[in-house]
Every structure is written in structure tokens, then in C-alpha cells.
Length: 239
Image 1 (spheres, rainbow, N blue to C red):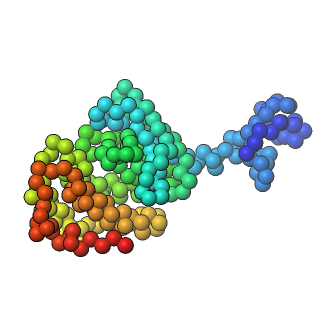
Image 2 (image 1 turned 60 degrees about the vertical axis):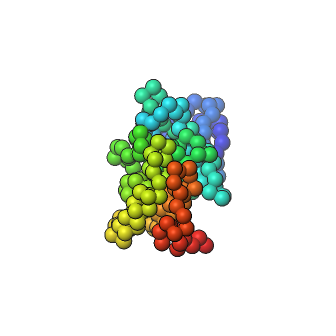
Image 3 (image 1 turned 90 degrees about the horizontal axis):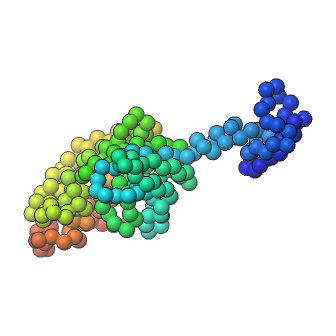
């Protein structure tokens, strides 16, 4: 990419609007000579737009993070919230994968994971306790992410958003066992993205594990003794 000075003789096409001596943005190399509105198309097509409405708390800004080494989050885009809670931001994913929408990289609350490919749109409404996809442009991958979140939400609500919930292992362990029983009949809808379909199986496994472990490591009014743990915890095997 570079700025090129227009030579009238080099652009004899009828109707050319560029004046002799004017500069225009153009691809160099193989596509050299193509005007910006043609060359830039392939670049802009890689830009992903994340938009929606934040209806939770007094947040001033919402951010998009990529997941880096060690599971840490690195900010790739940010948007201030409008008076109505609306937000909009763009970024260019270096490669397809899992990204996190939220307010902070250092806390587990107020953030949700989505799957983005270069050029994918994401339209979402953050509700007081959960989220929902809005509009008609969301991808098949993120529809599956949202379906899974709906399934796991009762566990997440007690494990992550525990303040004021007064939940202990007495009610959480039976709920976890109920979800584990339903996993066998949980039907995953295949997308046309083989990379996502493969990695999504691991995502569900570790998302469930995260909520199960997060619950027992947070402040509660009662904590389980060794004999209280259900078999799921005894069988945890992280490679």
C-alpha cells in the first residue's frame, strides 16, 4: 500500500476523476495501479464490527480482547457507551478464533466469549444478567456460542455472579449434576466451519470446568468437605 501520484497518461480510462498530479491510495506490486476503492476492498472486508447495547451497571466503555498466551486478554478495540448504552467498534482479527467482549481483562464478571473470523459482524445486547444476540447478521458460530451460554448460564450465575446470591455447594452441586446429565442429550448444530466445530467441543468442556472450579474457589457461607464433592470433581484430569 502507498500513495501514488496520478499521471493522466497512465490512466486514460474515460471518466477518470483523478486530476493530474493528485495522489491516491493504491496497492503496490501485483495490484499496482488499481484505485483505492478497488484495492481497499479486500482490506476493509477483513474488518470486523462489534456493536450493540449495554444494559448493565454504570459502565463507561466496553472493550474487545483477544486471548493470548497463558489465557490472558489483550485489548484490540474499545468503544465508549452512548447515552442509551449503545456501542460500536471495529478491529481486524489476525486470525479466526475466540475473542472476549467485556469491560476489564482482570475480572471474570461482565465479559463474554465469542468466535470471530476476519470480517465477521457481532451484534449483541448485554442484559442485566446475561446477553442475547440481536439483528440478523450474527454468524452461525456465535449463534452456537449463545446457545451454549444459555445452557451453562445457571451455573455461571452462581459461580461468577455470586455476590448477593447466597449460593453454596448445597444447591450448586445438584445443579451441576443436572447439567452433566443433560450434556449427553445436548445437540450441537454443526456449522460449515470445521475449525470452529472442532475447537468448540474443547471450549464447552473447559467452560464447564471453569464454572465448576470458580464456584469452589470463591467466598461462600459454607464450603464442602472432602466427602461432599460429587464425582465430577474427583475425575478432573487436565492434561
